[in-house]
Length: 456
Ligand SMILES: [Zn+2]
Image (cartoon, rainbow, N blue to C red; front, side, top):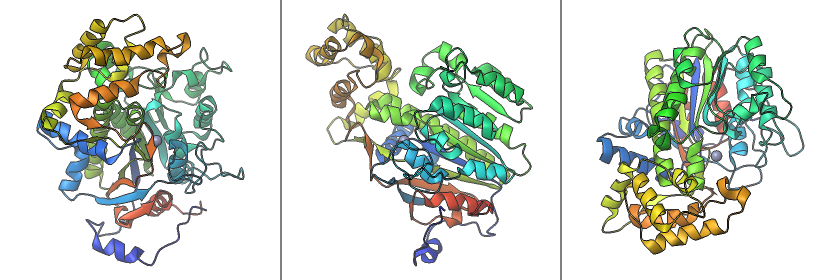
């Protein structure tokens, strides 16, 4: 199960590329960072934004500049699709096998693949997941549990406690709270009985000291976009950043003498890409980049940690496109204070053109034309009462199309792509990485890197 067929070129590939782990020692810990739905253009524009705004390179690309990591391209297909969803993508890493889109470590014939965090737990390591979306969302679930449907998040939440994940952090209060769960189960008190430290806001998370297990749920649904959070003192007080959650997760798990395995996900990079929301996209990518810095800082000191940095699939394939004003247009994003989602959620069918133009200018620093505003507002006349807050219904597409003239950022789609994606590794075990791999190969690579038996 999950064993990859070695191609004759394998040995050659490892000999010709990048830094290696000369002493071939085993990794004690793994920190696996995922920017969900990150096309290469997203990585590239986040780097350009940081360089022009703060005069520094992104942490991800600094690792490339300093030749600190092995780098590869990864094939992201699932069992039935060249373009995967997040559930099948994470299952390819988590279970070592390609499954149908929408499934979590369950094969088409109903048989199940043992998730990697359960294998590491059995081997005595501490295990955990951290994300900016619901803690039970597809990517963290793909490392942890089996589920016929990714949508069964209440079921996945209960399974997290059954298998004893040591750290669980993210959003999704509705999957843990008795007042919000359909079955009225109180997973917070279940966790308390199992000895978990519980945090439901940033202050209590940062105050934790001696916890060995931690359940941190900071919002109903996903956490706010990083850009909207940074402009709102209430959100800053209530919700931690991905980097802060990463630091507390490492602090908690590293108490285990047999080591730990931790997945960190910037989950809303994907949501922003689906919405063609450039401010949400780039500032959430930068939030993931800050979490990379936390992981690398720990690994550089610890010397026993394999850090994996990647994405599960491309999304929307955005890019900065040619034009006389491309530099100035792109630099506008430095002044953004709010996302398109924040703007579009703040208006309704009664909002006047002038008020909309004013709101967008206050949020993003540029004034669109009357007819452009009208072309967006008209969509609110078509929304039904229930649909107002459904992201799929808000006129993201039309705002993004107007916005391209002001940012020079263009979009290929509002959905996942089948592109081969970026993958980088740092530390013991990184020498196992070849320049081109299939997503499923990471399962055994993680087991081999830590010396945990492949057939466990
Ligand atoms: Zn995804």
